[in-house]
Image (cartoon, rainbow, N blue to C red):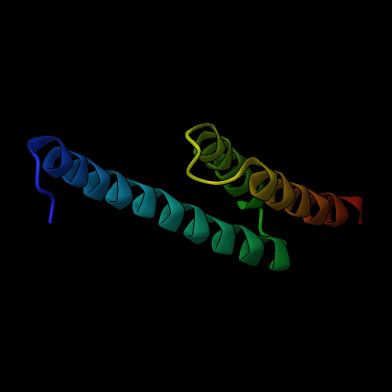
Length: 88
């Protein structure tokens, strides 16, 4: 339990921030799953899903919700799969 007013406020802030971060990460994971399924199915919606996912990943990295190397790795793997699909 926080003993000072500042500590109590900081606890409230961190709980709110954790909830927002969890929602964003959950949204990213959902989009990632949808994009991978669309790529496997060779769906036409894959391109728009990938663009949305990349935008969300970049924003998450900018806000330091995710590490920049993790975001770069995810984007790289996604684009590699997308390019492989378009080559054929």
